[in-house]
Length: 93
Image 1 (cartoon, one colour):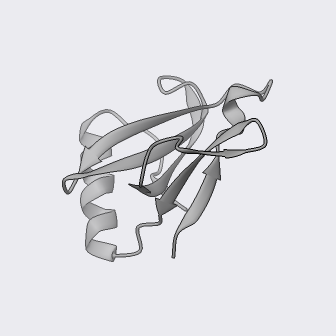
Image 2 (cartoon, rainbow, N blue to C red):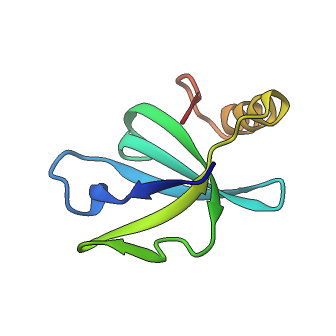
């Protein structure tokens, strides 16, 4: 099921950020509550479907994502992020 992530971090006064990484030959959208290097929470939103920030919700950019439900893919992605320095738990949308 495709979900829409609205990029409120571009308008929000609370520090948050997003990042896109490659996994399984697809782009994966990550959300951080705080900066990428200093955050309390990291959520793997899912595979980017279509164009990154390709739609609008009013004046807020939107990215369509497909949440990652497969347990093996979640484990592999968690291991990948941990190997790249992610210290906290890897959460999935």
